[in-house]
Image (cartoon, rainbow, N blue to C red; front, side, top):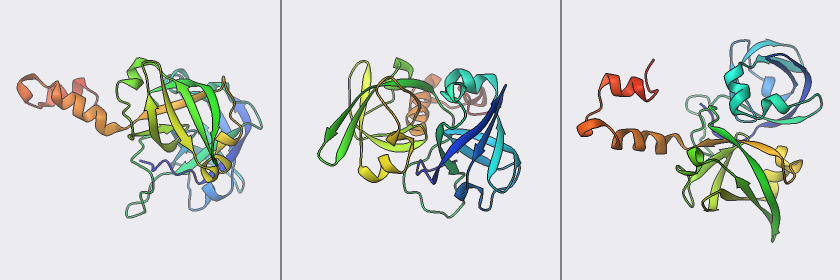
Length: 208
């Protein structure tokens, strides 16, 4: 579980089939092989690491649902270590399970901030509400508005300068993860006769 508060912008040092190696510094503090790190909002397991890098495996399902397959050496990535129990929750609860990708439609200055409008598929937008949370490339952001095909968030200067968003341009692909609470509410509301059974939880992905 993560908070959506980016700790560091790392850099891709090497790509290979189903594998990424990332140069980092702060994110490596207290990290061991087997730990989870969110890379552009995707929860991945550290399989190898050194003094200034870590390696993760990326399975095909992750590549289908995220922008990780587009990454090249020297590309910047948002990094966050898993939330420590008892730590501060500065953003919102982020699973690191990306729902889909969207594309940046526009970046419009508004005072000291930037309004970022992003196209999104319906399986994402149905969970998006004005003033609700969404994780974009792993960054916890508040939805300013939404319409039938897109959503808009506002980036303050600090967020933009300390994440990959300082490099983002119109047309770029971003990872989207909606607030898990919305999914739970939908699943419970659709439960037959209002009853939550073990089979119901399995059918909706809450149990293995």
